[in-house]
Length: 211
Ligand code: SF4
Image (tube, rainbow, N blue to C red; front, side, top):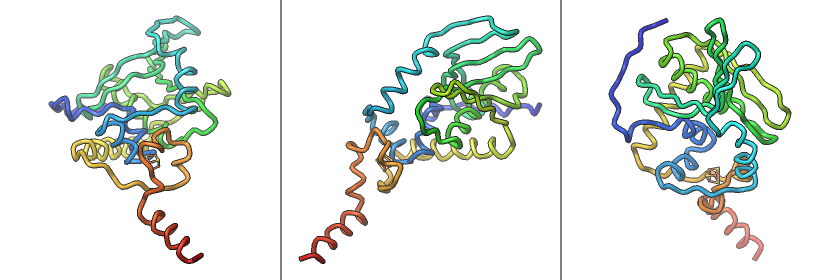
């Protein structure tokens, strides 16, 4: 595999991999959490945390010709990212296979795939291997969906890392865009996206029209 281009990062430049998913969901959500330090739970985040407890404990298990490590910390010096992988499977043939647990009825697959790819980039660098696949484990259906680490997914992940770092460095809070995703966002009461000017003024004009 290609040799890695290592970089020195300031602590402030290191991106938690969870921030990538927040950024891809909504840049404002990412800034509220990572720039403003605001986090609120809703029913989706609480149920997710409860379902997640199984893999929150650090464990090393031997099952089906593989060593399974849970809550496995990873880091990339190349990309300046860090995180904790739910499960990493080390197979007897040397294959390393990351698995990310997801909960809830709605999984946004492209966000989940980018997060899994970011874990993969870290594991490749840490163990000097190429990893071709990982999986997303859906805790409700108890089914795994395999994800191929294509060049396209790797490029998308690198782009998300750069954009997230730029947002975090800027300390800016992007404007809200009130849309369908806001309904499931646990920060809706902190964000108040309904005060997004266009929607706000549209509603004022609607009231005036009815006068
Ligand atoms: S409520 Fe909507 S605009 Fe605000 S952070 Fe959440 S998803 Fe983004």
